[in-house]
Image (tube, rainbow, N blue to C red; front, top):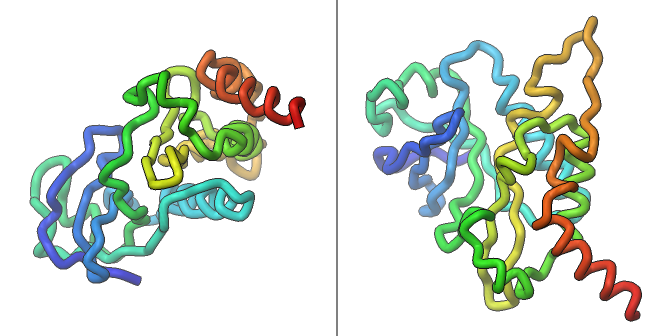
Length: 200
């Protein structure tokens, strides 16, 4: 487990308002918090989906459980001490050079090294009923490295039908049209993979 060593330096303007903070290993982490809720369902969804993707061989950012200290909380409506009280956050290593999927120049897609991961991510989303990765919201980062660009999935809090299922109501399974499978970006990348396999 890690802990914060400096004041939170950024609040992301997304639905869950994750924060960016420097931690005890001297790295920065993007941390999802519990917004003061007594049971950390969303954080559990983040953790379990991240573990599934990693076990399936998908490139993911390193995860950690992180304690953010009271004195490092900014104390704004979007970032309150109560959000972090008596709980840990789910943190992933900040990839400072990464671009969001929609910021990647299509010309550079030829440098993506893990195109097959996109297939795994899409089908894993259907399996885990992740309602928040779709044609309008890819929740993917493109992380450059010496070897090329790697697709990194982020934000899994909407798995299991946005946590709306219960012992009475079963999961409503997603279809291909609820995922990224029918997008032109997905088709273009997967077409390159299929063509390469046929040529072998």
